[in-house]
Image 1 (cartoon, protein in one colour):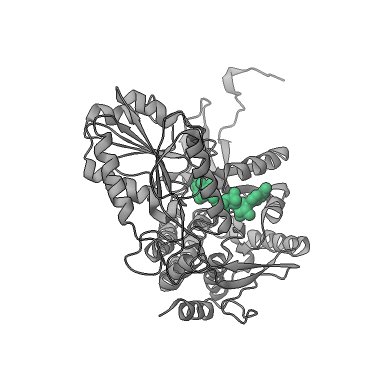
Image 2: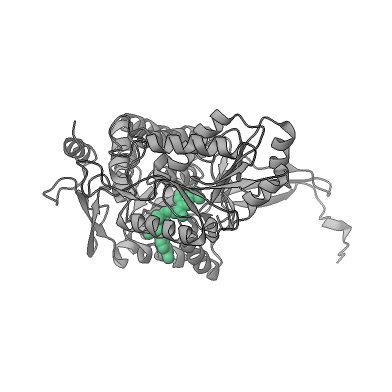
Length: 514
Ligand code: NAD
């Protein structure tokens, strides 16, 4: 099936409204005033025209969400879990088409698009289990005939702002976990990836309708920074979960803090792999390649810096140069292709600018460095994965450029030197070490080790499982989403003390006799 046939099939499947004669077109969930076009990064083809929400439509959605909250939050959590189970089943049925849509819309490999759809299914399964495990603690009271415990209640309406590079999975981390906790959500996806959002909305809406539940439990509207900022300003939004660049997170954080609201921030990364003299080099090189060029370098966990011990530096660099020369860049829907396009032309410009700056700062080009025009893909936004040799002090090493640019640096001495280089950036999302030395490994994982939210051993920086809490420190924003006890971010904790005696003793033995 060629791309156009695939688009036609998917458009029909997700009932993407047909206002665009050239193929897939979508109106989103409400009528707005402005229109923007979404093009595929694969070949530049216009996929859809999207309506941007206006303030009236937004307000109407919030009111619907508030009404839905009354019904949804009153349902027992295991009953909500049953609805989430059905949502997971619905995503299972549509996995192939959703995966293909994610790939067409973002340019990630078809395998990765399918993986993202699978991640939503995994999150639903996880949330079903959670629906019977939203536990609080009980504690012993210091007062006789008293009982004390904590319980968790939902927050209300959750606002979700998402980035283009995970246009569906990040929504599910937030919306599905928030929902099982009893919240409803309103989603403003990236203006660079609106179609996967419409498909997700279509899938959940089917399940809500079948169960006679209000559509306001999961809501969607479109737009860019301006429309996203409405969630930050809005006192009706109990928690704003924002995924994207550090610059965006700083703005959202300030606005939400101004009204003392809650935020959950998942921002940029600048992730390094350390390869020590005791590493399995073959394994390390495979992980480096996947981490650096997978998703064309457009993951928050992409490997951007490589810190290699001087004794194995030349061996690693030679292997990488050889493999970079063999990488197939092209149509991500085709087998054998390992690197798809960047999201749009402005991303290509940022890639070109950053390489120019890094070279001017003294970096040395080892591989790549240029825009590419694969045959038959005119209009696509392709670049060559790029390898740069860099002194650890290179200013560009501080910046996250959302493209496949990997800086390789040499270190000498102990693993502590490498750890210091790993930590010497403003961001703190993911990190990894390749070593077979137990002391080096434990040092990296200790409190004097990596300062990142994710620290892996003999695994690259990207490709996290949903079961763990995902997120990072420093400018990455400190949020945790997905597995473990991340659900607590979507609930308010209440401490309850019950006196079942006939007297009124005070805490700390205070006497207050009338
Ligand atoms: P971006 O910051 O340009 O946009 C992200 C979202 O924020 C979009 O929906 C956008 O419309 C919205 N937005 C922008 N300015 C806003 C404002 N002032 N108020 C409210 N909303 C606003 O990011 P992007 O280019 O879509 O994505 C790439 C970035 O996202 C990278 O930095 C990447 O590392 C990061 N990211 C982080 C994670 C994580 O979990 N830590 C996951 C995915 C992506």
